[in-house]
Length: 158
Image 1 (tube, rainbow, N blue to C red):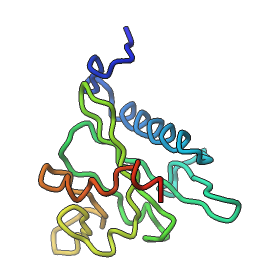
Image 2 (image 1 turned 180 degrees about the vertical axis):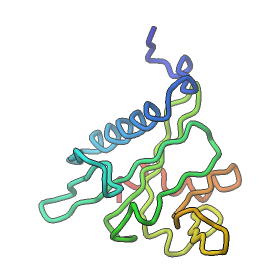
Image 3 (image 1 turned 180 degrees about the horizontal axis):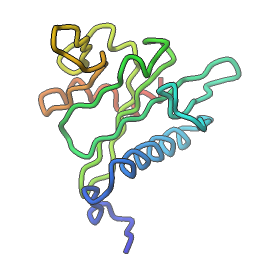
Image 4 (image 1 turned 90 degrees about the vertical axis):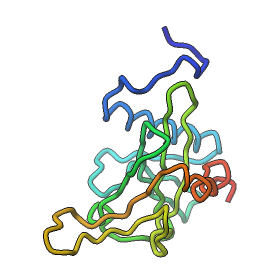
């Protein structure tokens, strides 16, 4: 039975794809409530899940990443954001914890121009390293204060 009380919600039985879709829909709902126009892409081959139109001349590209825990690591490969870091490219990070409402963070891609403990720029260019270069987020209890400034409720007002 589905309840409107998040105390009864658990996410650990869901597949990776289901968690990702919930993250996308949750982010779209948040932005729709903020009065923004949202346009979904039919094909996600450019690392973009949807687009927000801010006015007739501007848009923001959004990539959503969702994690089921309060800690962990997520990343975007550099080749998936082919055009690189830019002012109108954002990552929406959705944290889902059992018994709690999902939390959304709205992160401008330009944060990776100045990597730190939270935002990682991994090149994997040393001998023996085979992973593709990536921009990552190190989600930890220690980094939650750094992440909190990107809470979607703070970012949408900007």
